[in-house]
Amino acid sequence: MCQFFETIKIINFSPQNLEFHNARLNFTRKEIFGTKDPINLNDILSSISIPTAEIHKCRVIYSISIKKIEVLPYFRKEIKKLKIIYSDEISYDHKSTDREFFNELLEKKEDCDEILIVKNNLITDTSFSNIAFYDGAKWFTPAKPILKGTKREMLIRNLSLNEKNIRIEEILKNFTSFSLINAMLELSENIIPIENISM
Image (cartoon, rainbow, N blue to C red; front, side, top):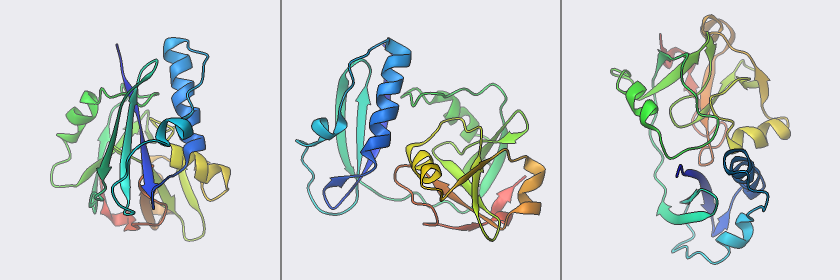
C-alpha cells in the first residue's frame, strides 16, 4: 500500500503549523483512500517523546492510519546554488514516500547543491522545498508548484507570500534573490542571490 508522510517542525517541545499538516494529511487520506474519519495530529503527537528543547524534525508516516512516527535532530541542508532542470512529466500532488523520480532528477544537478524544476515552461519547486522569489519589495512563489507545502500555504494565507506564474526568463529580470521554504525552513531564513540559479 502506498504511504505518505508529513514533516513537522518541533521548537521548544512544541509541534508547529499543525493546522496545515492536519489539513493536508486528511485531504490525502480522503483523496487516495476514501477515508472520511479525520486524524488529529494534536492528539497523536501529544504523547511523543522529545529529548531536548532544540529544533527537531518529526516525520509522520501514514496511509489510512498512522504507521510510524520518528523524531530526529534537525540539521539544515546548506544550499547555495540551484540547477534548472526540465521535467514536464513529474507529478507529486501528494507527499508520498516514493521519491525515486526526484532522485533521478538530482543526478543532473552537476556542481550545484540542488535542482529547480521547470514544468511546462513554469518554475515549480526544488526536490525538497517550495521556493520564493524577492523583487525588492514583495515575495512571490510559483502558482503551480509540484506540491503545495504547508509553510507555503500558511505564508499565502497570512499575506506574506504572493502566488504568481513565473517563467524561467523572468527570474533574472524581475527578482533579486530567492529563499527555499518548507516545514523546516522559514521565509528569509537563508536568502540567496538570484545569480546563484544556474541555467
